[in-house]
Image (tube, rainbow, N blue to C red; front, side, top):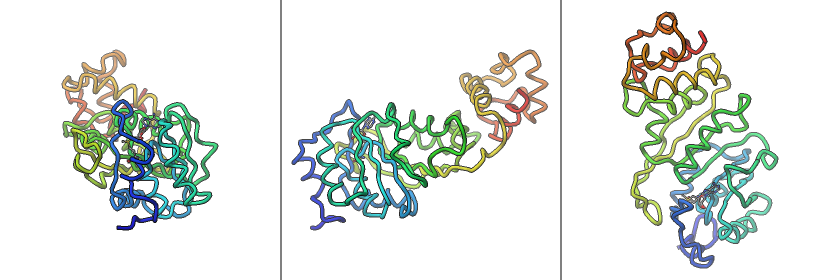
Length: 277
Ligand code: SAM
């Protein structure tokens, strides 16, 4: 049966380039090109956009992005074994794929990208969370990207979209929802990957907001939410004691009961509190 793009099936690519998955690189590959095209569509219309893909591996998602019409894909991969497979895709789509060898946590990719930019990635989960936090906390806003479409372990995806009162609600939800509109757009079972991981996965799409949802200083918001959620079962008047002697007064001024707990407090109230500091 033919593939979506006339290139060889991914199992053949992996065999030809001896791309046996390495656990230490978090390699769980997507081999179904219909599924990778579906993930690419979760990022919305790609025509007229540059896509930054992190961790392309053998290129399943890369091929989905190109087949779905991305203007250009800049793909950062730290495993040199994947480069010949990516070069083969680049030759099939002249001028539309730029494979870069390097660690996405260290490489500065800005020079390779032209606006508008969408980020799409199926990354090892620890790297994904670290990059998400970096992409949400640049030196200035708006950031270089219009949207992020990222694969996470299901529990992490739930932490990103969680609302007050949920066990998953915490700093990641507040940070993501302060500056973006995050949604879970696809659930994937372990069997979707080769080799299958132990956990379920989900794709989260985050559309950036032009301005943060409520005004306040980002560093202050992060400091306050870190204190509040480090002791999430404690009353705020106690977990936020370090903010100063007048913390109860400031909590009340922000519309928060001093006896409330962090997990009950909305983003809007946390921002109101941050504005008082
Ligand atoms: N995108 C491919 C797919 O969907 O089949 C591969 C996904 S696999 C979960 C993660 C990929 O990220 C691997 O190819 C791995 O080598 C790469 N990777 C891991 N850490 C990375 C990093 N810090 N920078 C760039 N790539 C990384």
